[in-house]
Length: 232
Image (cartoon, rainbow, N blue to C red):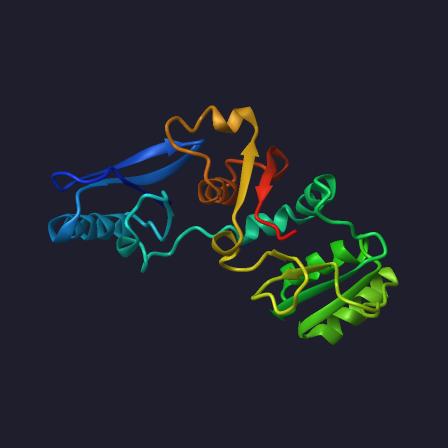
């Protein structure tokens, strides 16, 4: 079960802990009010109860005090963004922000994970030159050649795009797909009316959408990108 954290502002310290259905999925929701030590103690006790109920990851609304959330495992956006990778490229192209025709793309990561291999497969069909920067690049390069006849590498001049599962290293515009990508590069999404109709008062934040997608309450094809902080 996911946790959902809401801060109701200053005032007399108060916490309300309930299990609720959001977008067709069960969440353990904590609403907290107040500041200072008394409020923090109440929140800490409530978080302990949530852990006893099996909560391991949290959707945290933006107003939640940073000090109360810094040690919590938040729902990450990376696996959702990886699943939408082809659509992200389509959206950037449709917005006139990116053209991969005849271009070189650099794919970088700490190591060649399964998600990196899938991104390489997609890119190998959409750009002319694919440069790999990661541990295990040679095995990935050989696999691309064996399966698709793609010779990764080559191309003169700077890359048109960096696709990064880590920290960008070059000057090319970067699309982030790794852990923490949602905090480092803000994106906004829309979802099918079936999904949004079941959210009630809860905003469709990327974190909430990622949680709903991870538990199967939202299908990949029901999600669309609406904005992305992408350098010009």
